[in-house]
Image (cartoon, rainbow over all chains, first blue to last red; front, side, top):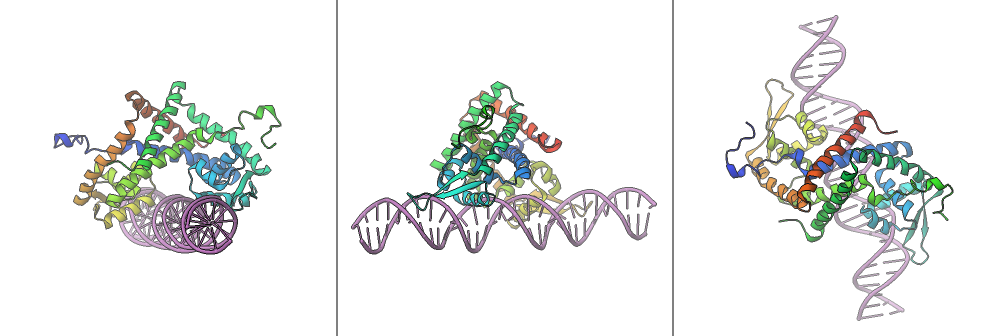
Length: 164
Length: 164
DNA sequence: TAAAATTGGTTTCAATTGTAACCGCCTTCC
DNA sequence: GGAAGGCGGTTACAATTGAAACCAATTTTA
């Protein structure tokens, strides 16, 4: 009834099922996941998502500057700067001036920061495991490669301009 | 020094590869996609993402109230209210009081709104198609079902409380 | 070697978003 | 039928975010 169309060739395009629309679904999924996790460690360690991301990167790649964090995280430099300043306030990271280039500041987890990092990692891992546990091994592998492909495609939009 | 481990069995969990971390990847992917698309129709029709979402739903399900939009979109009611008010300002939707319940306001696309809607749908479709074109038919099907499963899982966190 | 242009990073200001309080209408239950 | 509570929707205010201007150090170039 409601699915009837007056014009045959309008039928397809005229009907957008938002619930089925991939970009929309991605956004809902991503928000649900991020918010849940943010809540989990935010409530324990008083960390925002950007702050935790900075810590996650520094935990793996020490001695980065803010600019290098920008590359790694795809966050913008203002967000990094703010995350860094709250992390400094919490003594979760240290900042030292690079003598070779006095504009540059080298960042690292502090001892306290590494402590927190090491407690959060398993927690984060646990969430990921829980998510993944709903998938078969085959699906997991598929997902990896699918995300890569979609990412590449979306990246292309940004680089080579939008469609149309 | 800082990378040394004191305890052998910390070694595995201690290493979080953010670039491989599903929640993180989802968020980057979703942002890239949404921003690109938002830019595409935002620049043409001066629509924000929430506003476009409201139109997308109204295009498919006429005669909804704001509360029903909340259900459909998973946006919160303030966001809906704001989207509705800009859409009213642009004459993209109409609002009529429900005589049976004078609190309730029935929303619909205006003629102009439907026009815009019908021009955006193919555009949105095109983006989705372009994204999907990077996947094989098999992968597309997989993705559908994978997203469903992940969504369900993440939903469970919200409902039954977080892990741990 | 002194302007000019670039780079790392921060600050400022405006726009977006989330939370909570709120107003008006409606229902219900004494 | 009239207070008490619930629901639809908006407003107000605070927190977050993004864009652009900005400062200081460095590199370029002439």
